[in-house]
Amino acid sequence: MFDFDEIETDVQKKGADAWKEAGGKDEKAVTKEAAAPKAAEAPAAPKAAAPKQDDVTIRVGYDYKGQRWHQEHKVKHGITILELKKQMTTADVEEAGWFQLMKGGLPAEDSVVLEKDMRLDFAYLPPRTPIGTKKLDMGEAPAGGWQGNVEVTVCFDPISKSSSSFSVKKGSTISDLKLMMAQEDPTGTTQVEDFDLAVNGAGGHWPLDTATLIVDGRLSQLALVGPR
Image 1 (cartoon, helix red, strand yellow):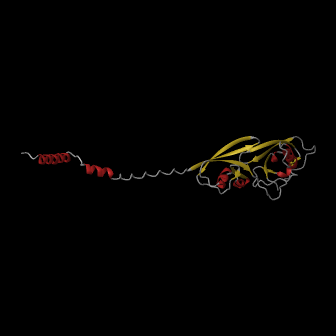
Image 2 (tube, rainbow, N blue to C red):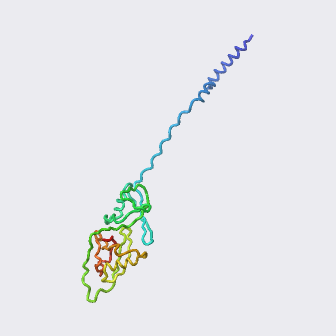
Image 3 (cartoon, rainbow, N blue to C red):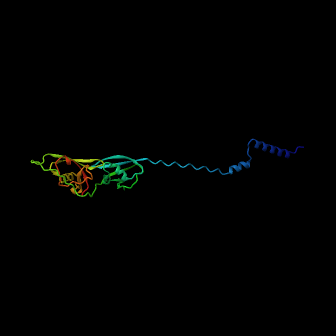
């Protein structure tokens, strides 16, 4: 007689062998693989740092008699405010101390490093302590006295080149011109003691004595400077 228990065992063994040969996995192996933790994912590569700017653009705003404009200065990354000011006054580096650059309404220190594009505002700060004054010899008046007028242009700011012109009678003094300028201030706050005048372009902008006569084109180009 057939031993059915032996036949069943033999069939099960042959079936399991055939399953493994075909690439199958037994239940215990599948369960073990499912329980194994996944390998940790490799960390993401760090993002590359933004490259430094070789140059920065500084936009300097000006405000004079209600008119506003700006100038852009492209400078090397990392220079200071003082170095920028000297670049703005290449004609006369001493004038770098005659103005301030404002940031957010406050004076920016000369030592501030410029590392990115920004907006600054110009504020004129003429020298306050020139030594003495200069009285020029303009010669004697002709027999009939001084006749006619002289057109005098006064530069207020050597950077923006802002200026105003005044028609002055020949024989007038620097003091007369200063009074005329003060009277043209719409706010009425300017006093003749608040400023001095010098020959524009003269080294150091040495203030003129207020008794100096204006008689010809020698004093037709003047500059505003701080008081004595």
